[in-house]
Length: 525
Image (cartoon, rainbow, N blue to C red):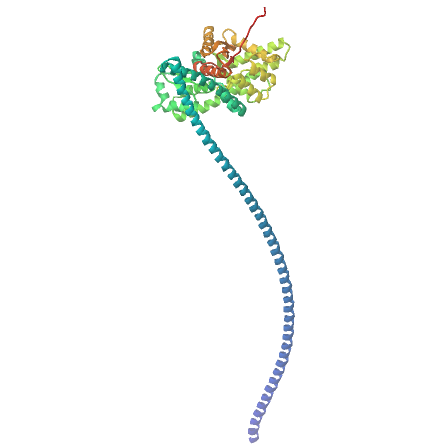
């Protein structure tokens, strides 16, 4: 039992010792392994560190190379930009230099002009002083001449003054004629437009005896009450109608009618139709008036175009310019001394064709010239000049043959040698216009108009005789060569033209031809 009691602690001690030894051995083994592992990790760290160092050196080298390349590129770009900037600066310097040169030149020019202006001003002042001196001298001479006249002739002051004024008036009149001629010649040399203003013909005037036939249209109304509706409150309806149609509305005491007046036949027709529609409709108000006028204008334009096409078809004249057809249609509403110009043109076309056939000429060309000979009357209320000149200009613009252009221009003028178609058209025009019933102007009134034209011309000083020719389209005046010189002849001719414009009414234009000549006759015996 004691042995057993002694053996148990021994076993426990042995077990403890064995345990301690095992722990120590385990610790040593773990430490050895940790040392090995640490050594291995240290070697691996050295390798990683060495590799990192090599990689860093490589990256540093690459960075240095790239930095050098970027520096080279930046330097090249900077040098290029610097070169462009220098070139731009040089160009600006050149421009600035040019501007400086230009400014210097302008300054020199300005200085020269200032000197010139100063010289002109000095000359003007000198001329003004000279003019004042001459004016004073002239006044002194006049006063001296008055005294001499009074002393020599023994005339009274009033008589001497009248004589002096008469003499001065003659001198001033001569100088005025010379000045008119000089101004006219300068205008002809410097500008065609100015010469046209000086020598331009007046707008066509229609004979007063037939004004009601060719410049007005009447519209029947159901009652006089309708006149008040046409006029409107404070005249607003009639003003709107005149503004929309371009015609004058005359509302007088004549029962049952109102009168529409206009020199433009197309406008007059538009107004007539529009007024008839408004009266039939009963709604006469400014908006309605403008609407009806616009619709009626389109209708009349369509009728004009259709009339032109129909005339070209009926007469067999083909190849007309598109703008000539409506001009022919406008002649439907144009009258001359009561004769329809469109019907007259058709007659002249057929007559010209027959005359050309008799003479062995081109009948189609003659018919074309005859149909278009009065085409200028379609727009002669809108343009200045006679209808032959206007028509010839239109035909030339629309590429008509030269024969047609010449026939239009010369069918009222003197016959031209070799211009056969012009002569044919002129003859056909005379036949159509002079046939019985063609025109409403009587022989007595026709003669009165010619006599009035001659009378106006004969009233001018120095005129010996005057002859109206070309159916009153021209007046030829013969003056006394002893009383009227070349300078005064121009003034007399202009005075006659102005008097005709002021005192007479006539279709188209009147040509004034003044003739001044000196005839010396001697006989050898």
